[in-house]
Amino acid sequence: MILGLRTAIYPVADLAAAKAWYGQVLNAKPYFDEPFYVGFSSGGFELGLLPSEEAGIGGVQAYWAAVSVADEFARLVSLGATVHEPPRDVGAGIKVASVIDPFGNRFSIIENPHFSIEAVR
Image: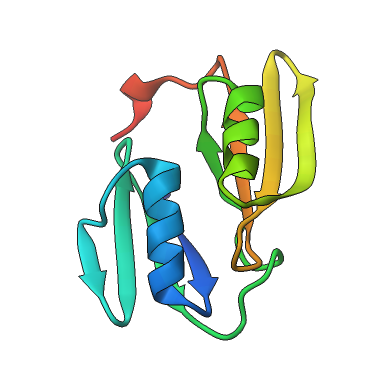
């Protein structure tokens, strides 16, 4: 049985730089920090960094919650991400956007008024 999103893993060529950048994005330090994997906990979910020479936008398509997609999108770009898909309303009050992180991965955000944190287990 699928229980829901737990971890999104991003392949990165420069683990130290990615750890610093994602530390700023999440405003957190990793809870797991080894040369072979770095894990951040965010809202009950995990963002993982995996050393790899094959980073890219085709490898990860997880959407991370944001209170305001527009505000978070602007913040990510100010941290050095580049625009992939600007904020847009996809219907029913749901807004999405994505950037390319400094390591070549897609980082997507979602503002979803239908999501219930109480349903997370």
